Image (tube, rainbow over all chains, first blue to last red; front, side, top):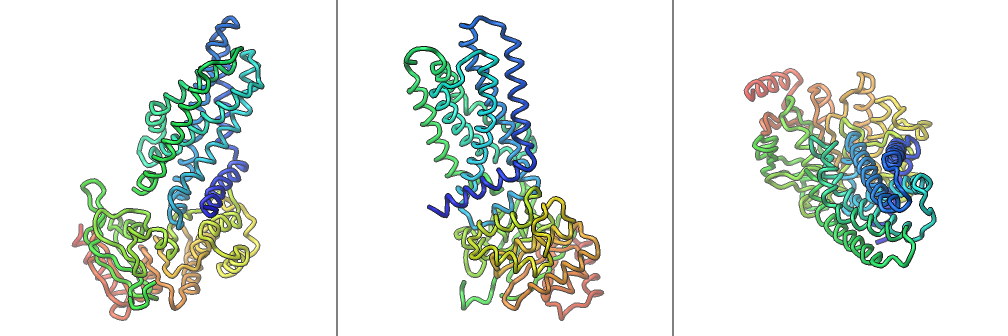
Length: 224
Length: 241
């Protein structure tokens, strides 16, 4: 088990190191996210009450598409440089490759969200330090990463890989998007936020299911 | 490894279809331990598919690959530990340094005393003073040296080379040939797919020609000189068109 995690972390660290030098992926996700939030902010000139209703949806639409952008690039870069074959040649359980790539995607998405959330809270005039919003953000991002890493690996082997990931990924993560929007709305609203934990449980179940499915099929996804 | 089995590589009825199009058709191949097999063939003959199937990157449609007596389909992890692979793509991360690339792969292969091993291989392939350079800034020839060091990190008994000279200038090709001779120890089995009949004949002690996914010719080096090889190759390639 130590070998499994050691190698998965090494794969994630390798991605972080390469990204720290180029900043290609994080920068494009960040610019995209901030632009979308600014556009939505101008588009909805509404009262404080309406803003509170719309803001969670804006936030998760932004994170979903930014995630698609980043996850697609992480596998395209790996594939185009032949490095995916290099990984496949290593005597690794394919689950190690999946976990390493998934952790990398999770960290990149989280990094973008840490920068975007304050911008979002300022523009939409919402509280920044809401612990329940942080919790839902971390969990939903994990859910996006578990499914997105699997679908990005599938999409990269197709001819229409640039738009294949959103076509495959977005319909599947609709339950996570709904749960994240609902739970974020409850987290930002005053009061106890009844139903918050149920939405959270739904996301946890999604993560567990997608982790299991990904471990079962990732070998077949990688090998042509 | 199987001590009684003289074959490092055995392929039985190896077939790979891409849709209806066959890339390999019932290839039977046996390479004895310690041999250097050069595989020739025109474009689309199936050389890369053969190397990729032997390397376990590609799952064959039918047939079986045995490496050092182990069934590649059933013992993927163990088999991959026996293999070093060099292709025309370097399989290196261009934004990492040569040292970082080699350390990453050494970790993936559980290489003990990684730093010492990397230093030894850097010396062997002529990378002294270049290890701290980002791979993307190295010349193609130097990148290929790093790729060879990567393939040798875990001291694999089998080396698979898929047109490793592609994109190299004649001087760099000569250096790669020298390196391959240097690392081709007595017990290392090498299979090299190449377009260069001269280089393949020079380095290999066994020769094979693939045409349209079939193994059309197999011989030992002693049975052929360059002229005879050229003639046989032209004849088989023309017959396959």
